[in-house]
Each structure stands twice: as structure tokens, then as C-alpha cells.
Image: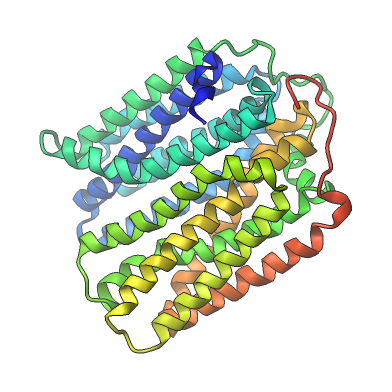
Length: 414
């Protein structure tokens, strides 16, 4: 897997991704602390609003931004996004009111919603070999999972010597490093410049989302996005309540449960390149969807019964299995899109997937939170049922004639 880092262009792009992730991770920790400084006991409401603003930016900005920058080189788009994020991060230490946080977070996340799909569309162009591209997807998944573990640790270490709002300087440094690495990558200057100058803006904006409904090979992805969000949102939203209230365990235990979930995802990401050399995406993604739903049903059973000594351990094991299913379902999507979409439409397609997937999260996050008053067991069962219905739709949509659909690449493709 690591041999692809010998590829000079990709190694710079991967370094850019890592720096960007670390910057974002530090910002997440710092925002929580600054929100408490400004809002006090109302900090949870402020944080909830911050994450809502983040998801709204991801859902609505990604397709609009892609349409706006379609005539620009992708390297320029990524560098510009990093510069905008850097400026927003440098402004955050000086906020004095909640609304200022919301505005700057929206700017920062709007820039991220521009950077990420553009980055995703560049990688298959610079790594035309499918095995190399699969390894790149695995490395990106590992980087994301490790960031969720390492960023809080790095933030905690920095907080021993600096104030909370100084963490935003670390965020800015991360984005600056990301921009410099993109500049140093030998990405073709004309990569990503659209040839069609006549297509109206809003048609371009919705074209990426429409691709998923018009392209038979991508329709299952729409349904499976719902499965991922339905199941994993329960883990991300309810872990703290389950561990602290149901199990009576410490805050450290909350972090450990989430780390176990991340470890499952990391293990799957390490194994998937080898698995995908032997099996088609359908044979990996649909069993992963089944694993997600079955594991959450098992969680419902464990939480509905009397909590015994075995219950925390069982739930932790199920958290790990959900992590495995999460990576097994999400990572291969990155292989399906370049195979089904011509190179000149890749940026729009990845922006469409970015918007659609985060739209599912935007619905499932508050849904799993709102259902909690019915009890954790029932909530888990409802979310598992939602995920199962979506997975069944994915099975129906993934008809045999669409399993191996391919397109001819116009440049840098398979």
C-alpha cells in the first residue's frame, strides 16, 4: 500500500490531505472550547448549531462551488480553498459572539466542501492504475480515521502550553502546509478545465447529483449512503449517552468506545485493497451493509435487556464491527465513480456524492437524537431498520447488468 507514496504527485497530494485533516481536527477541538468560553452552559446548543452549519455547507455548497469553479484548474481550486480556510482559521481566535463563530465556520466548511471533491477527482487522474488508486483510497481512509484519534491527543498536548484559541493557529498552519504541498505537486495545469462553456450555472450545479440518479451503476450508492448514515449516526450521537448513563462509565471510556469503532474502520481499510483485487465492489459493499444493520440490531438487543457485566464489552465489539462495515461500504464508492463517469465529469460526480452523503447525515443525526426519548434499544432498532430498507433498495438497484459498467476515460483514466 505504502509504495504509492513513491509517486511524487500523489505523495504531495496525500501530504496535503493529512495536513488538512490535522488542521480541521484541531479546529474541532478548539471550537468546542471557545464555544464554552463564549456561551458557558449553553455551549452544547452552540456546538449543535455549529455542526448543523457544517452539514448545511457540505450539502449545498459542494455542487454550487463545483459549478462555479468548473473552468478553473483543479490545483488552483484546491489552493484557493486552502487559503480561504486559512483566513477563516486566523479570524476565529478573535470572535466574541456566537454569530461570528457561525459565519466563520460556514466559510471554513464551504471551502472544505470545495476542496474535498476536487481532491477526490484529481487522485484517479494522477493514479491511472486501479490497484494504485485503491491503495490511495485506503490510505485516505486510514488518514481520516487516525485523525479522529490523533487530533484530540495533539490538541491536549498543545493545551498544556497554549490557550484554547491558539489552537486555531495550528489549524491555519495545517491549511498553509496543505496549500504549499498542492502547489508543489506536478498536477497538469489544464486538469479539470471544462470544455463546455455554454452549460447554464444551475444545470452544472445539479449535474453531479443527477449523475447518481441517471447512471445505473451509481444508483445503488444513493441508497447505501442512507444505510451508512442511519447506522453510524447512532454510534456517533449516542455513544456518550450509552457509556455514561447506561453503563455508568467515565469520559475516558467514551473516547475508548469511539476509538474501538475507529479501529474497526482502520482494520477494514488495511484489508480492503487486497480484498478488492479478488472481489467486485458489490460483493464487498452489500455484505458490509448487512453487517452494519445486523450489528446495530444486536446493539438494540443488548441495550434492551438487563445490563450485565458482559454488555459493555459486547457493545464495544459491535462498535468495532460497525467500523468494519462503515469502511467496507464507503471506501469502494471511490472506485465506482471513476469507472462510471468520464474524467471531465469526475469533479461534478464527486461533488454530487459529497452533497448526497452529507445530506443523509444531516437527516440522520437529528433523527437518532430525537428518537432517544423512546430508549436506546428502540432507537437502535429503528435506525437499523431504516438502514436495512435502504440496503434492500441498493440490492434491487444493483442489477447484474450494472455491476461492471465502465466508461472510456478521456484522460488519465483506467
